[in-house]
Length: 321
Image 1: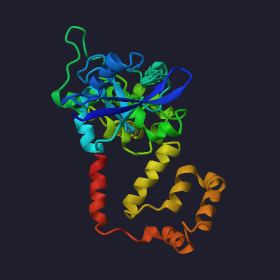
Image 2: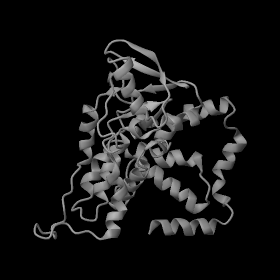
Image 3: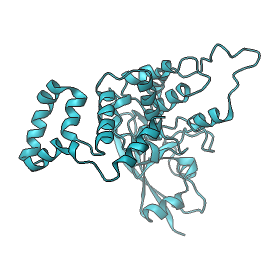
Image 4: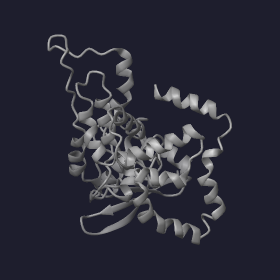
């Protein structure tokens, strides 16, 4: 019988190390059952969190070979089919403070979640007697967002959070904000969006890691897009984020081509573009990333429309409705 080999990242509050565990293969073992086997039979000092074992509570999320997943809902045989028969490296979630081994601290994350103002303040026309009735199609529009179990997988793999958490929130926070802001029963959708604007809503890198790693198939990136659309509809069009989106859309409507030379001044203003971005532009020239011919083409790109530009304009128009 072939053995499993787990390489687990350990942390005792002071020291970090990677420890090797080898144990017999049993068909149908999940990552969580392997961790439980290690703790009960090989090393009682190993720390991890788990609760429901049914992919509902989200407590058992870890990283395996650098990818976040639910330990209770992931078969080791499936991982070996993906990664081969070599050792599997198990680590705590990324973008979080580690307390011990695979256990991470959630206090700060929960406090930041409060910025979404979670909780429904219903419209005044709903009575206490009849409750908050909702049409099936309105419920279906937000149903997927209600599936969020706060496992932290999206947070773990978010590249913007890896860069800095000072100007960006955990992706699940935007999911919860959009869940209430888009609810047809909500009295004031903007109360869930305002803090999101101040906390990085426009700084998403669109890497889609939050989408691909969510075990429930939720799209935090889609929630961010919905919040941005809500901001535009509310007239919140000032600031680099909204101006960037508007400039992007303007280029598509004019020619279907993105004019990157003009995009920065439209987003940040001429003064900021000249003072902050000029050194970067000069480095691009120096390293051959941008030549005078390519730059000139970008300046005149407004005169060259993509093929079937009218079809693209129809799509953009339909998307605005």
